[in-house]
Image 1 (cartoon, rainbow, N blue to C red):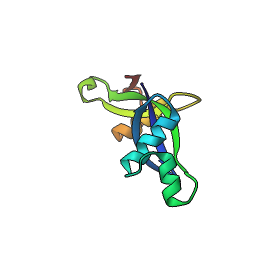
Image 2: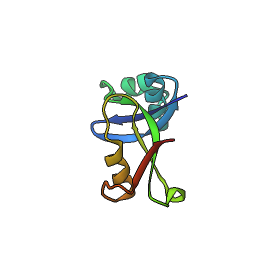
Image 3: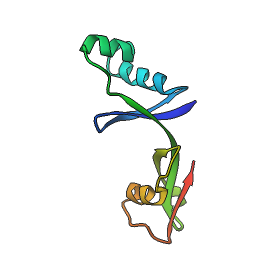
Image 4: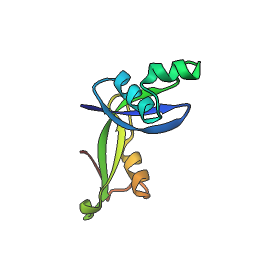
Length: 103
């Protein structure tokens, strides 16, 4: 199973385990009370703005604090600054004591 972050119009609805982008959008719509994305479109009488992006789980921690690691999700493709995302997740600045690793 892959993991997808589903969002619309800049709002993230969550991370969904699914085999495809469509399945992730369907799961998101189902969580909102619809049968699937098509039912949501039909009932709202408008096109869907849901977007599913495949993500991977990462962890961030500072020297000697791996037990207190914080998880975050990052896109599984393209360029992404994992150090900056890990620092934001921890609430610290990027430094030599910061570690990030794919979970």
